[in-house]
Image (cartoon, rainbow, N blue to C red):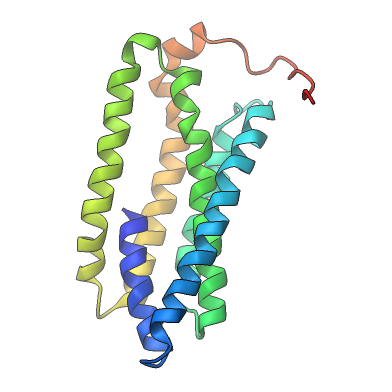
Length: 191
């Protein structure tokens, strides 16, 4: 949902910052550079989470930190006075939330028993579709109050990150008992 609503706000913010002649190019630049940040974040953090061994698990620390980074960046995005600052803020939003999503994608093979993977995938897919549909609607409710909209998104996203990251192991305790230990040393990289 945060993606859909923040994309709605982004277009409005660029329109407020840039002149009529520069708003399309400005939105294209912000969108392109933020997509690059997302493209880099997810695989890099995914590999790091694969190699992580901690008492909190391999995925939770990365998900928690990524969600919090994305949430704080949402809050600061509303304060961007110019296109350059807005671009950096949106890149950090994308980096943070994709740092959350990379390890989240690994929860399925790590913790969900094979017989429940279809249901888990369905639920996760429905969440993405509902978020994409509801996000712009929520964004439209704050079209005249973009700063407040970003604050609502930032607080709700950080709350969801803090609540969901620790709860994955609780929800999948039986599966984690059956899965191999993540505290064992990782094999050396091949290459």
